Length: 56
Image 1 (cartoon, helix red, strand yellow):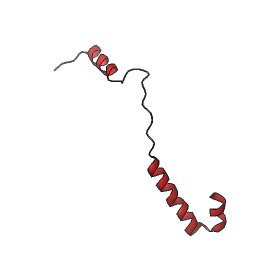
Image 2: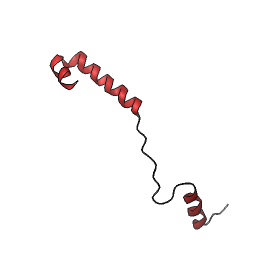
Image 3: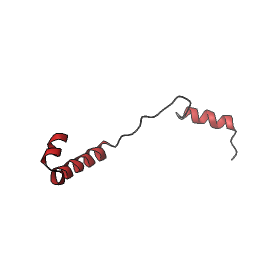
Image 4: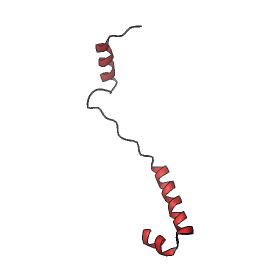
């Protein structure tokens, strides 16, 4: 099947991929929270009380 370029552009625009159409960036909040907690626990265990109390 051969498709002309203007037909492709029309179909892409109709599907929401036209100029100026942007999707919101996806942020992986569960992973950010989990790794932040791991970092805080490492500071608590190995970092000492002063650095941990200052950062938390």
